[in-house]
Length: 159
Image (cartoon, rainbow, N blue to C red; front, side, top):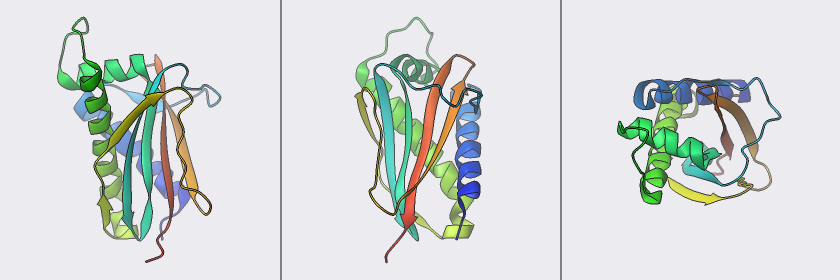
C-alpha cells in the first residue's frame, strides 16, 4: 500500500506537471502554511475508487480560478470569462491533476476508477469523507500571487 509521503509527493508533482504544461503557470509548495484561501472560492472535486477510495480537491479564490482559466484557454487577460467557463476550467484542472496523480500511484495501489469532476462555489469550502479517512493537504503558491489548497482524502477500500 502507498504511504502518506508518497501520496503527498504524487499530489504536488502531479499538480506541478499540469500547471506547468497545460496552464503555463508555476506553482510551489507555499512557504506560508497558515495562509488561507479567503473570500469567494471555487472547489473542484473528483472521486476515485479501487483499492483506495476517496476524493481529490483543488480549492482557490475566484480571482485565482479566473487567472487559471484565462491561461488554460489561451485568452488575453482582459477578456471576460463567464462563470461557466471558469467552473469548467477548474473542473478540467482537477481532472488533469487526478490523472497525473493516478499515473504516479497506480503501480502501488492498483487501478483506480475516476468520476467526472464537479465544482462548487462559496466561502470556507472544505471536504470530508467521514471517519477512517486520511487527508493530505498541500498549500501551493501560484505565480507568487495566489494561494490554493490541494487535498487528497482517502481510505482503504472495503471491497
